Image (tube, rainbow, N blue to C red; front, side, top):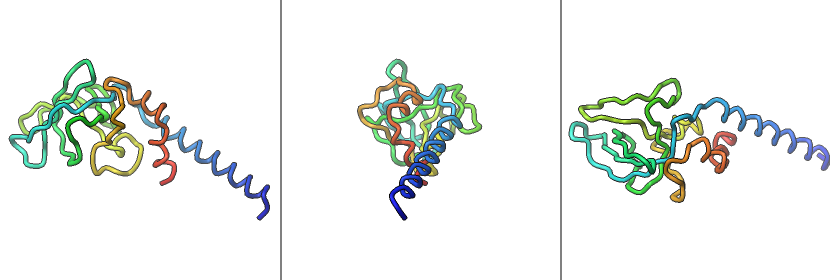
Length: 150
């Protein structure tokens, strides 16, 4: 294979991956999904595998029932607020095993970034609570590299 053939293959690979990146971005609506900071985590009084997380978007605090094992106080995470659409689900306030949940903390899978649904997507510690997740993604395109390289 000569240099020109290699360049053509590289150009095609970049073009194909760019289309995939744009497709991934256009398939998901991140309206009402913001960066939140985890302020407190308590055990759920009525469920062994659930926890109660208190999170803040910088302006308001929210109570969230969460089953993910990887959350810790101080982490920055994506918060789907009431009215957000995650997959085909419209997020609404819900009572889960007797506790109110005012939104949902999101995994990479739920946000359409990868097939990883082990736990909540943990963001850079310097992320700003209240910033829209869509804006965050524009300034952190490396999150899409997982989707492209799968």
